[in-house]
Each structure stands twice: as C-alpha cells, then as structure tokens.
Length: 170
Image (cartoon, rainbow, N blue to C red; front, side, top):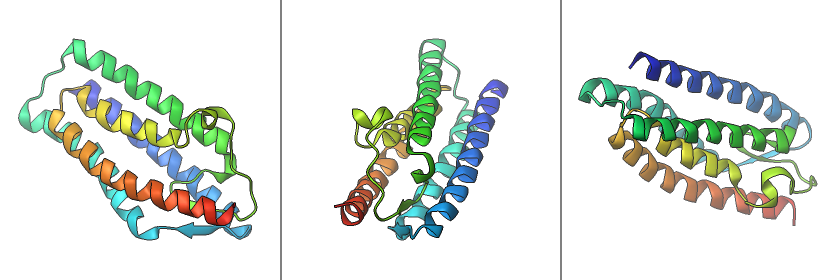
C-alpha cells in the first residue's frame, strides 16, 4: 500500500505541474485574445480527477484490495505510458495547451506530434490513466466509476473543444 501511495503522490505532483503550465499558458493566451469555451463543465472534470486520486487509495485501504502482480505491473506500465503521451501532447501544443478549452483566434491547428494520428491524443492518455491507475492495486470499483463518469465528461468536453476550434479557426 505504501508504494501505491507514493505512486498516487507522484501523479498528484504531475497534476500540480500541469496546472502550473496551464496557468502560465492561460495568461499567454488571454494576452493574445484567447477565448475560453465551455467553462461550465470544467469544475466537474476537476472534481472527477480529484475523486480518482482520492478514491483509488481509499478503495485499496477500506476494501483491502491486494496488489496482484499480473495486473498491477502491466497497469503501472500503462500509467507511465499515459504520462508520456500526456507530456508529448503538452510539449507539442506548447503555449496552446491548457486544462481548459482556450482558443487564440488565428492560430493554426497543431498537426504535429501525436496529433498526426489522433485528433485528441491527450484524452487517450486520460482514459488510459483513469482506468489503469486504480487497477495498479485492483481498485476496480474506482476504475469502473471513474471511467463511466469520465466518458460522459469527455463527450461534453470534446464537443465543446471541436466547436471552439472550428469557430476560431475555420
């Protein structure tokens, strides 16, 4: 359990790093006329991600979920790969990346990096991590609930994002 708490702590630190980058990029975008879209769903995304990071270790502790090496090690690999994909997205988008939907009018759509193959690769990372992180320590209930909630939120988010990008970059 202590190693799992270290993993959760590392993911929390990664999220804080993301928020610092997002805050800096938001200031940059706003200074260039950036427009935020879909503010209403953002608090729910934040709540879902915080719930994931709290519920997974809570489920392990409260329900005595064991570490099963045949499941845990592959899921840890998925978590690490998801982080790598997430940061590839962040570095590819540069200052255009944000945890919010913010579009600077006139900037071209990014088509390099993972965006060559997948329209929303960051959300692939989010889905993979949301499923794999709890399963590292067999917190299957958290994986199931987060995945279902995240699916609804991502449908909303991707719709908002696609409309925002289309309206600002026809």
